[in-house]
Image (cartoon, rainbow, N blue to C red; front, top):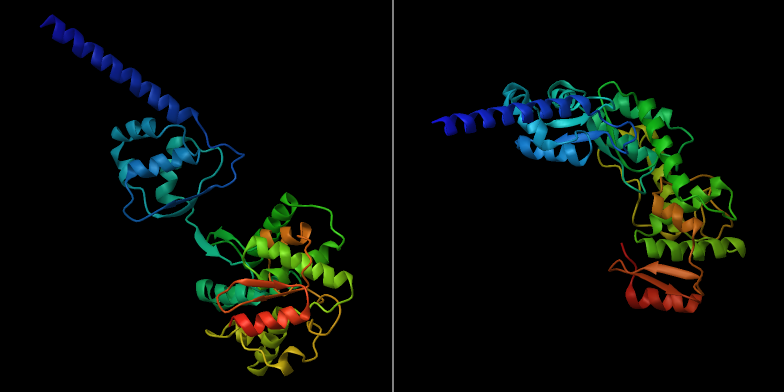
Length: 335
């Protein structure tokens, strides 16, 4: 009997010590101020144990095990966790982190794709946030085409359209700095060229090769002959036909990149025309991602002067116009 009592006493003391250590752990550790990402998502029906493990992996808490132990004595805290997307603030203790998951700032996810023009950003926001927010974004982003970095952003109910624009341009500056390198082009022209490349290719290897071709054309006073710039100009004309850009933004099915281009549209006079016209367009035609910008800064030099995307989406390169025309006849052009 004495042995049983002794073992029980040891067990109780051990449990108390573990509890004290767990409480100390969850109370002393705070969310670091130098993390790359402070967003946290909880799916509907996700187990608390899995949530705690993910919190530990993202360094929002120090130990999932100790927080789990703490929650055994504070069951209400664990049962009140709600699904959603949150921003975890630096400096919170582990317990404050868990508490914030039931009443913290819930965020909305917005994803903007590489190659979208700012009008497409606004059109997307019209569907997600409504007409007023979309048009406010369009106005706030004037003259910022190319610098609205395509990425996933998390905003709360108080994030204004102007604040979202600032988030995008700050992200652009950060991403551009990460790949900064000498270039024969001014920074503005680097972004214009990157916007063309973003619309011409999706594979990083193809982007770098096409960058080499277009830079070579530019240097040797060749027209760039990029149909994407004609698509951009044609969409502007089509928007004007239905009442203007803002009307097109609010339309559910406006085509910002017309796939079918007739000769008269390709050669139609426009400041964005590159077919048979020297030089770069006056401004970016879309918002390029990091890979497209990197391609301009680190182009691949080849003997190629021509390229095309075939009907299967494969890029075909050639050194002469005759070879290029033969590729078009043999492989067909993608639609």
